[in-house]
Length: 286
Image (cartoon, rainbow, N blue to C red):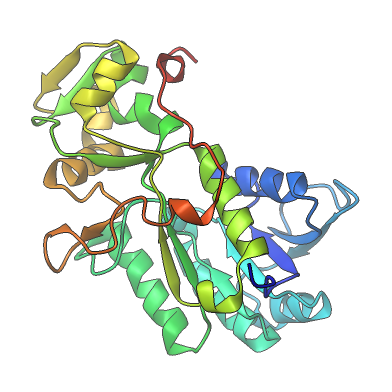
């Protein structure tokens, strides 16, 4: 295998669900890296020997670019909440470009977004287009839905039922958070630039319909018109609709309105020897 291109990393959003997992995976891989946090964060300045922390204003391009440049950062990984922090990514991208960062990993970590027509998925695709516009290479990770988020997705956290809006017969890409973070860190620290720059990685731990998930975890599928409680008008309800339409596959092609040539799970082989986690009933017993 060719030598990895990138040696120095920075992580933004280390306190979130995805960011915490990536943080842990970097530590487990014995990688030295920089964590950027907001100045209001209560994070420690020296959490671990291989980890540096810099408190910055994400929107202050001069400040952030100076920190990135001083630390010689090659790769900036963004795991910020794309719903509430999406605009901050644009400032972070400008800072990374000014600092000479070589690769930006945007906060995707979900379903396929290329060509998405509306909503958060379109916002993510628009940001990827912005990275290309400013000439900053990106690596995008389409991971599907996280196993640990399945209980809220089907309303189980409200009434302990596995509620499905629609038939629940469209396959969705589902992946364990630990596999997502492990894969991200593995490829960033092992692959050469030509296999990372402006590439899309389509992961899939398992490809199952919601009806199949219900059978796997031993719960009867509860077909409903809407999810229970406040979940009925939540983003999770929209995601169930996306899955029902077929868009829950990380290989989904919006232009063709079907699975594309780069299919769900096509990137899995880049992590040789790894055994991807399976969905078990334990997910619904926590």
